[in-house]
Length: 91
Image 1: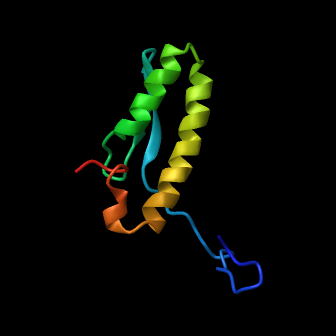
Image 2: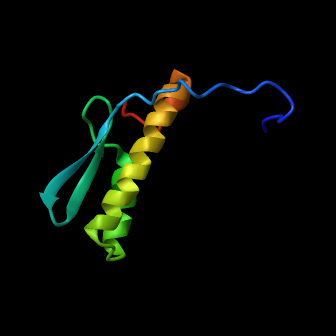
């Protein structure tokens, strides 16, 4: 927890690097795919997208969640230590 009385981190100059991407596949069974910085699919996101597909969610919902995940993964990739990134990128 951050102590509001203590010095905080200045995030005014923080720039999130554009690592990874969300791509439209053109395939109805997998409309979007989240790719890691190496261009490989992120398995945990693929599983989540498959669950959304199974629940009959529209492709627009999958895209919206995919954009959120992309921002979150970018943040984690630039803030976590390399040993903590195990689930984010394939070995």
